[in-house]
Image (cartoon, rainbow, N blue to C red; front, top):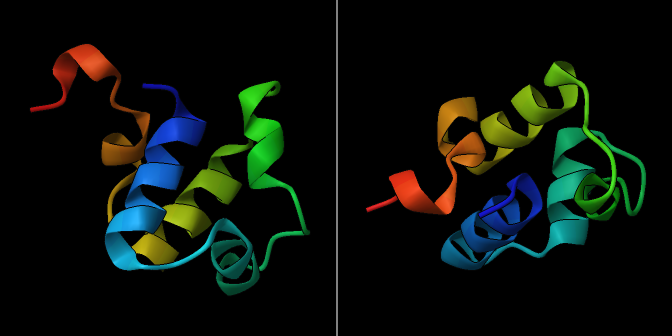
Length: 67
């Protein structure tokens, strides 16, 4: 899975919308959706991971390495 897909999946698991996550992480509206086309900074991924209560590694895992 891509970073965007992983973030959306984590949002589903926590019952949070992407918009709520962006607000919690201090990101501008639609920032996370842009990650489908551009690579975010490590700082932004770190803030999202912290807001989701997960690690950057977990968000960056691709489909083949997920169990």
